[in-house]
Image 1 (tube, rainbow, N blue to C red):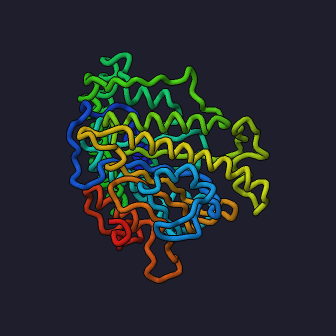
Image 2 (cartoon, one colour):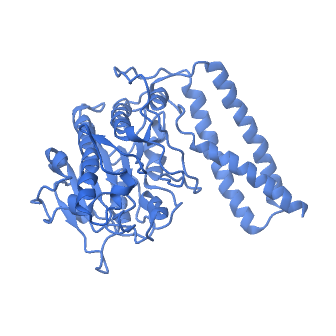
Length: 423
């Protein structure tokens, strides 16, 4: 009984410690880098996930190939047609329902390491912030988007002012911050020592858990070393004025999203980070668009039951998502990297969702939009998901990782790639 109590006490300590690697909003290491690091064509990754997906008939064109037509949701994006690819028929073959939305970047199993964190292990190695996790509002506490290799969901920053401070500000009290980081390292040493003492007295299953724990500790120690190194380094100077308040009220989610896109573009331009995710929540907020208060909350609109009026208002919300995405692509085509090339050429921008049809809670046929990264773009690629050899969304992720210079031949339940379509 004494052993079990000690183990429960230890695992609680582990749980607290494992939460620390998720604090990636603090500065990590090095000033702005001139080098690009990875050997692939793509050097940066942005993943945007919408909690309620998109109205598929208003997004997917009926035509395939390069001569696809303009749908209501594609209108704001068509000026970038040669820089993006649409995919229909892709998914992870996972279960349906809101709880499986989290599969979006994981693959078939919720809690597996996400696409962005695999990329961050290489792309984030030389940037001050290994990866940045954002959300344009509070959303549901159940919804997660990013998981590390230990299956821990990483927290998302909801306030643009906090993102700005993370990217371009220094702690008010550098000495105290340094003391706190060093104190944290001392605490790690103590907990690690206790864990090693237990290692020879627990079951094989618990030893496996301890091995995962020690890897987490090593990762955390590396992060803390980078924090210490980066405390006194200068931050990039940017000419950007935040509003006087953070638009964090649910009804201001679209305004929040606009600010986050601006900050994401600045983060990439200054090479403060090379891996960013952004979650677009969707609950009961009633939006006002172009001076018009919509007929129902966002979540209710997504459960439209084919009601034409609800669909019309849903398309207004989703068109705003596409308009803001298009503006972000404008910025990446205007801003340049250290070599003077447009950022979009070396940046993957993935926009999608873990749910294909929110009205039916279906997670099949996900809306997938991919721009940039020097791939062959300009087409709608329609996949017949009923075909035995049909590629999965994970196959697209394999191609993306390979283009980022990361050796990857499998992602979750996918093991082929989509190179034949894009490379």
